[in-house]
Length: 161
Image (tube, rainbow, N blue to C red):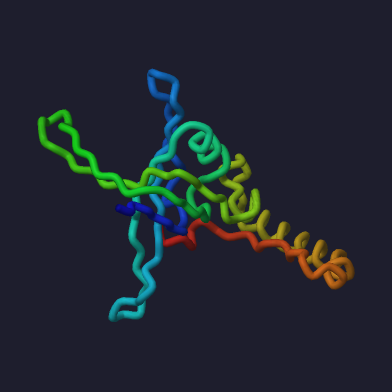
């Protein structure tokens, strides 16, 4: 039998991190994954998939991912149930991640997690600075086909989640 899940999407909020009483690190997060089709109004919908990761990967997810981060996950689908405080049975389906890949360069438009709160004027200053870096490094970039241009700043208000 096969139970394999591979997803690419963006985190809907910062990961929730905790350490169990036995010392195991656990991070949970929700991944927004766009559907391949649009609805009648031409809007693209997304599925919101709950994910859980353990140990060193959980520590890395907590350190390097935040709301809006692009991530790829590989894992297995798991269903479980528990009784909540009101005595009702709650069913949970989630992806238990074997691997989490960070799909954006460190710090690319995701400065909120690093304590840098960008304002519009700061972002405009960064944009002109990035343009200067591009023009200064253009000669080098033309000689190196593998170099990447700087990523533009992305305002988190543009995310649908």
